[in-house]
Image 1: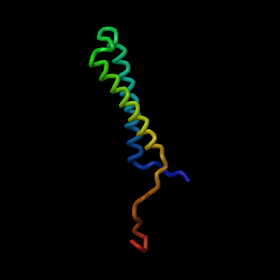
Image 2: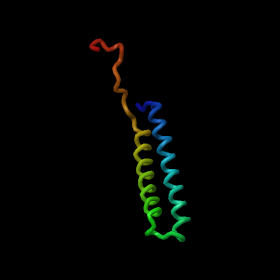
Image 3: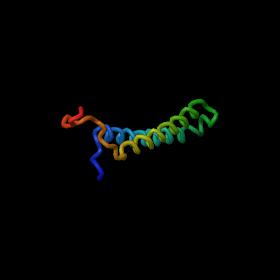
Image 4: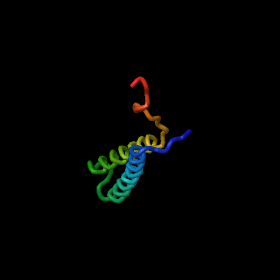
Length: 81
């Protein structure tokens, strides 16, 4: 039985999509700067690192947003609580 995603899962999915978009934007900026600066420029290296970071953050947050996480809180109707 699949439960509806909770609010924090929806937020993590949205941030995951934004991370993918940020990786794409960094890739476009890197592609536009590669002719004038070259690959040995520190800005090019930082853009490559940003692409790597945003891409894998997007993967992790998207997976967290889609996972069926059980409710781990305490119920007030629990007789042992």
